[in-house]
Length: 84
Image 1 (tube, rainbow, N blue to C red):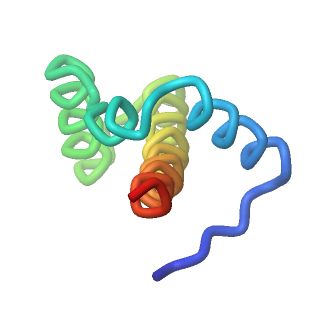
Image 2 (image 1 turned 180 degrees about the horizontal axis):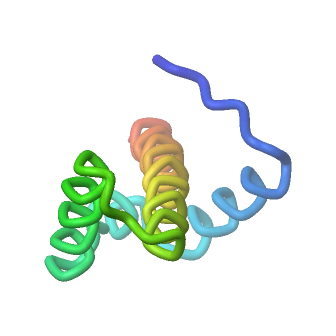
């Protein structure tokens, strides 16, 4: 399993979210179809070198959220295994 080194504030936030939402709710979360389409469009346009500075920032933010959600889901999955 890959370990992600996050600043303590991120870990605190993820632990808080795991405590407030059920692990099943966290594991079921996914981006809306609109957000997925926007991300796909940005990635395509990035590969073509056609992103504005604002769009590049959006893409970077989306990548950060994706990394955080991966860690959050891993924490939620771990909780489901400990609960059984």
